[in-house]
Length: 332
Image (cartoon, rainbow, N blue to C red; front, side):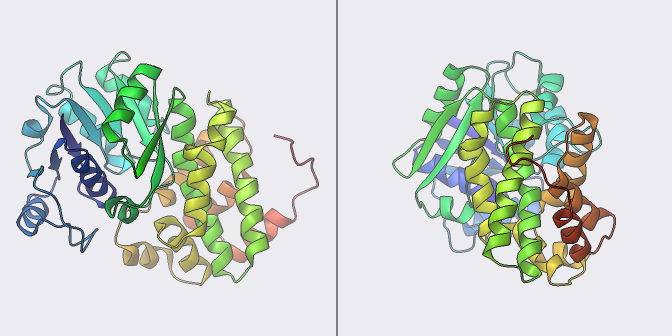
């Protein structure tokens, strides 16, 4: 197939490599012409995935119109804050039958809408669409290490056809029709990973980390179900799997941000030193406001938002969480 992919970050490049392994013809687009040229000339994304060479069936392109027109499927792997803008730029060029897939994780800033809502508003509710998500670090996918993901779409037929695009012996795809659940899992886990990083940066132990992951999963389920997601989705790759990954491994940009904050580093400097978009930083505020609009209590995410956006001391945030009243463990 001819697959077009928007986004030359680590995740977009890794997915291009996986698609190329499946012998698809991949067109990889980036918004910076100089960066696209450098990747093409070096056949390597030196900034994000140094040491991983691109195969010959990955073609670099800086023209968005050229990239979008005539492709069999279009995959967006840009940061969530740029998602709607990309949709607006491609809406006149994408064919109504071309399946739109996104690997972006987050909530739209300001409106706090989920990304599928942006797709429906810009391209129409009937446009074929799917999301790919799960416990994935870009470098491990690029290196061909065993990985499993969830592909969610409005219909199981679309989910299955998209899964076939990616599926290989080291890249296992599970299918779902719960787009909302997978979206909430992907957005919320980034915020919770910051919380886990803060706790570890403060010097707390494995007990604290395990408690944060467990109670964070409760938050994720509470919010996701209230918004129309299915509870069982959050026990899968796009929920618990992704949550465990980002909370426990330092390849996670969100966890690294939390570690820096817990260690006393300035937030702006910490984000700058990571040198990539840290989705959970903005998502913390967006997720909390989305939860408040739906009268959902998510105390861990609330404290993360207060630390990042209201300069609350991390130690005080932890104390406020620990001093909450006793409640039944399964009480949502």
